[in-house]
Length: 289
Image (cartoon, rainbow, N blue to C red; front, side, top):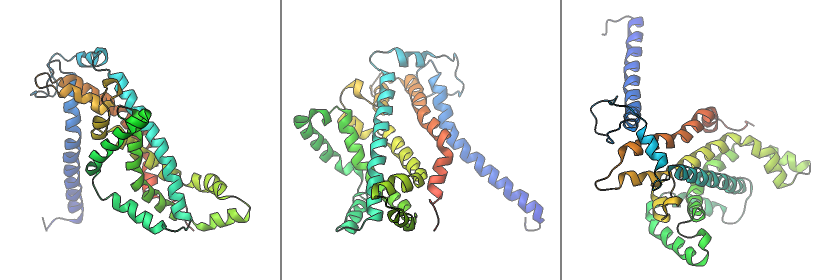
């Protein structure tokens, strides 16, 4: 090997890279292919020796949409609704908070930022009992944001998502030169006009990234939704799909696989449509002064 020419070593290096890349692609795609196979498998099992099952059919998809006890359409709509509302509210509040922390100087600012960062160190599961107790108390005072309500679940999501997002967005705000603010003030603009008309358009990449991360995190949540929601028609997709596998002797792996594939479509579409914005938001600053 040490006697290889430069071109031979280069080809050998390329070959090793291709082998490693193909192995990683195989490990990434194989579970998806297995679930795809199970969704068309009429035997209702994941334990099959064939990637392409015999008697391929759409029975699992048919039962997914025609079983009144498992309203798949309602579940996926609940997930989209909860995730969309959480995303809009989280991005709105986070943007205003990050702007205040980045541009204003007020008493307790540093301590508040440190507290936000410190809270994020602890796992969210540690607060599960406290969150459940709090929402239970709200249920007796304001039922609209209590247990088994989407509004209560959205409020909990907002509290958990804004900490990291505030730090992420504040860092992006800090890359925007203050000369923009100062020139706007000289021209007679208010803080709100400076924020909404000058700074906010520059924040578009990071806004999209935070919106996508919030949507995906909320869309894929299981634990909080399972604890706070009790009615089948209130379940989001992840909790609803759990019904197919929760029976001791009646696991329905075929409909579960079909539902998992259909449920992944919104996330896949978002990534395909906004992939350039995701890369830009994570790697680029707004302007350079």
